[in-house]
Image (cartoon, rainbow, N blue to C red):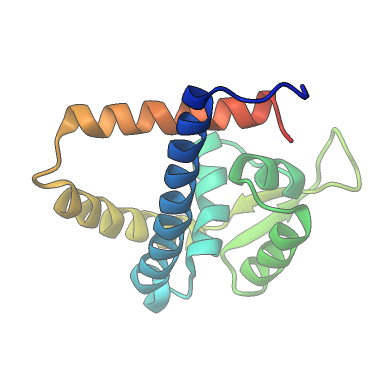
Length: 157
C-alpha cells in the first residue's frame, strides 16, 4: 500500500467504483429476495440454491470449504446450509478419499430435481428481465464486474 495522494482521475474512478459496489449490494439483496420467492415452494432459499448450484456448476461433489470459496460465503454458513439441506434430503455426504474429516457434499435425487426445477424457473425469469436490455451493455457490465472481482482477489485491502 502506498501513501501517495490519489490523482483527481483516480479519485473519480474510485467514486465510480464505489457507486458500482453500492448498486451490486442493492442488486444482491433484490436477487436474494427474488431467489427466495422462486424457490420457496420447493423447500429451498436462495442461499440453499447457491449451495446446490455450486455443486452443479462444478460437476462433481465438493467439500463445504470448496463450496464456500466458490460462492463467496463463510465455511460456517455453508456448513449450516449443508446440514439443513441434508436434513431435508437435498444433499448427502460421502467419504472423501483425500481428506477423512472433510466429507464430500453430493446432491441427492431430490436435490437434483429441485435444482432442475428452480433453474427452469430462473431461466424464464432471467429471459423476461433481459428483454429490452442491450446485449453489448450487459457484456460490458459483466466484464467490468469480473475485472473488479479479479482486482479484489489480487489486491485485497
